[in-house]
Length: 184
Picture 1 (cartoon, one colour):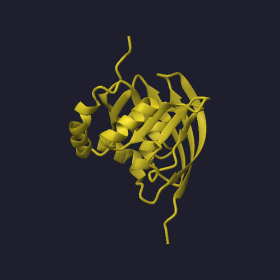
Picture 2 (cartoon, one colour; picture 1 turned 180 degrees about the horizontal axis):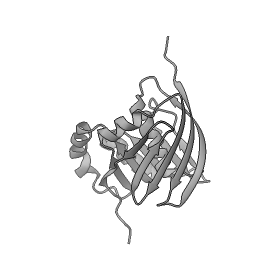
Picture 3 (cartoon, helix red, strand yellow; picture 1 turned 90 degrees about the horizontal axis):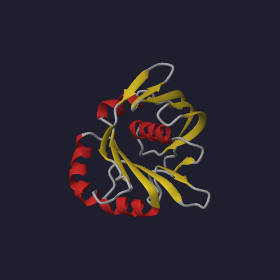
Picture 4 (cartoon, one colour; picture 1 turned 30 degrees about the vertical axis):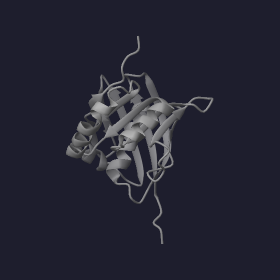
């Protein structure tokens, strides 16, 4: 018998002072049986950092042609493609060809460093790619907030990120590995 996804219901208050975005979101997130609390919470963090009315979750970890989160315009074109983990160069290039902006979030510590050393040179020419690393300590702290029913708030100010639940508060570090090139 196949295992079913675990459903998490989240009341999410986002105050991103850097982008001037302030909103409450009611989310239902399906966590695939192979997905850890760490990965699910990184997905929620990515949602908070890029939240707007058009941002949506992809179909999940078992779907190869969709990102973890994406934003499409009214014509269906992909404006933003957000992927977690360490995709291979081919998948990164395919995403960069399909979307206006691609953001990769890595979160596995030393494994992410090794992965980046292998693909950094190959991805240097991808002008619409950002790669951001979340250190293991931040990921573990985020995972401690996970529950089937969550009330969370995320505050972003001057590049600093804080995720809070009624029980705990977590400072999240973000390390930028690659930023998109600015166009002249």
